[in-house]
Length: 132
Image (cartoon, rainbow, N blue to C red):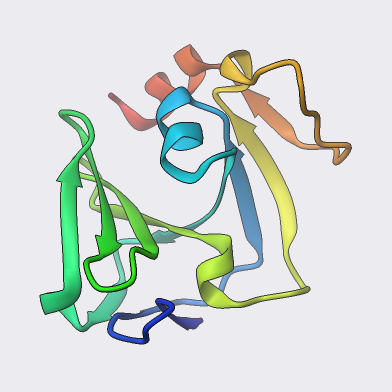
């Protein structure tokens, strides 16, 4: 998979995958204005245009990045596992993905609901899964 930011200053390439998740934590909702629809890309990604990447430490165990030219959200990076989680829309895909899971489901506000059948993990389950 390959995607670019809006101004095409940053490109991210990753192995193909066909699954995505939604994160309902307050930080993700504040970062993007709603749930974070994301693709787990692992640690095997290639980023070009790194001079345009601005990184923000959003917690002790993770950082978020955006393009400092156009503001496009680039990734959420889990430091302990070196895993990159990239917004689904970054890759410009319209079909072929399966909605696998929703995380921080206990933090999801009541005013929206996805109808897809997914695995649902609470905050505690997510922290245990990723060792945070």
